[in-house]
Amino acid sequence: MKKIACVLLLGLVCLVLDGCIVAHPTVAPPALKVEVKTVKPGPNYVWISGHWKWTGGRYFWVSGHWTKKRVGKSWVPGHWIKRGGRWAWKPGHWR
Image (cartoon, rainbow, N blue to C red; front, side):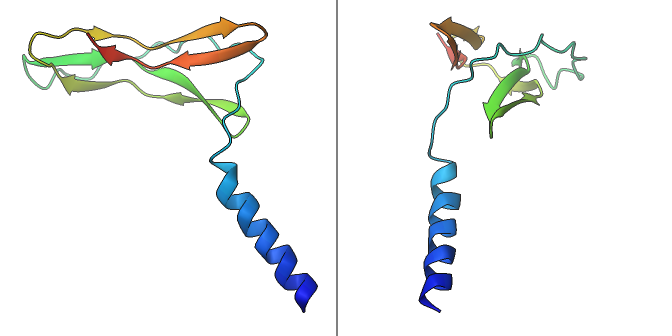
């Protein structure tokens, strides 16, 4: 019984910590997808392009979307940077 409880506890700990481990891919992200922008919801919106996200040992696509502009700011898109033999995501931000 103790062995089963220990195995279950270890499995739970691994499951919880799985999302906490940050791993940088050694494989470049795929080419960006061509996205069709939806209708702009209003004059004060800016398009945030989609991008590849690395999680669970693979890339998956995060679709682009419209967001409200910030007064006096412009959107700087995120991008992947190669550092040594690994790739790191630099998130987009308002400047």
